[in-house]
Length: 551
Image (cartoon, rainbow, N blue to C red; front, side, top):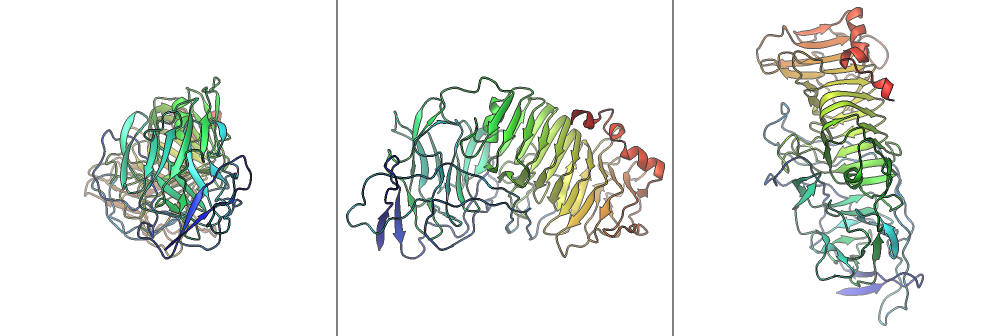
């Protein structure tokens, strides 16, 4: 038995949305709403395993509200088993467990209102679930919008129907859509085609639907429709938009003429709505200013130099989504945010989280390949397995890195200054450095190693010396929690450790006492004061580059 309800119009300038009230929980609503992501790097779709994709919290009560704001969040964590790896290989299985990512407040368009009277036989008026974006009747919108609806509690994603966007002048077929029945889709990002999970997300009280990365045509008018199986509000009412006049918006006719600074905003207050859209339009030397809110979708680019990507603060600007080795089985293809063959990149004041759950295979949050003179500061980077994959010369400061399996790895040289290295969910391996003998690997100075409560036996670094005999990892004057194993390092492969450089100097407990190193693994080394001073010299470690001159 279904009781049709419509929204009583609040103003005459904007149209109606229709809601349908249903008894019970329908079969087409997933109890664990899916979330999607976009990948970068691989050239062909992957047929890998099915990946659970997170989603919003189930049920809350109460009617729709045109108020409602997003609030800040804290860093994520997850638990569950995972198949460890040595930086590559077959994807691991496992059962997902949730995680909460750092996020921020984000206004998202004006509250809609409608016109006309209440139809005969309809129930009482229901306020719209606003704000929603792009705002109805708005003009000069970005060419790369995401469809967003905000509620007064967590919505629930369904598993049928679609969100469709039509060209108002040629409405025969949608120009973009998100099909809720599809578990995977393909998309072109940064010039390559990738396999993605269904690009629908719940973040706090917001339902977010990510359109294909190619964007919409400038100067055109579009309208949005939403089928009944797509999303339900916190009181379990489905959202339906079927009138082509109800939700219309127009895209700005011209691209920015000055690209020195490009503003990116989830609520249409900028020139672009997605990070990928802004990067595609950027030139060498552009600054991309990201506003507050959650930016969903994978980012990938190569060959653009001296870009600055600056958020509103890591507790306010969140870049998130799902990508992993099951979807795109290559180190270039499975990251949430991936770059290659660039120099001079600065990333600051953001949180980047790959929401792939524990056991969902290798899933980098930030991949920087052949990235020379690149900087990450005042940011939080989160995944579970393989959070960072870095090669080149990279500097990080005043940031936090979260994960648990080889979550800092690669072939490059990286200097971490005042960075928190946090093990989440389970014990694992912090670092796997595959650098060659002629260069340094990963150096941590005045940094802090922390963990979720109850974790023990965590490893500072591991390596197979038969494969990577010159691996280099150094911890200089770092604070280490009790979760670190007494052995500190894991050395396998049976090869010689003569060229291995697992180094440490005056590690201390959170209380300030020196950490006992009497049980450290054979083959590791405690440095002298003079040797440690060399490792503190950032210009020396990074081969003549002083990143402080670029800040």
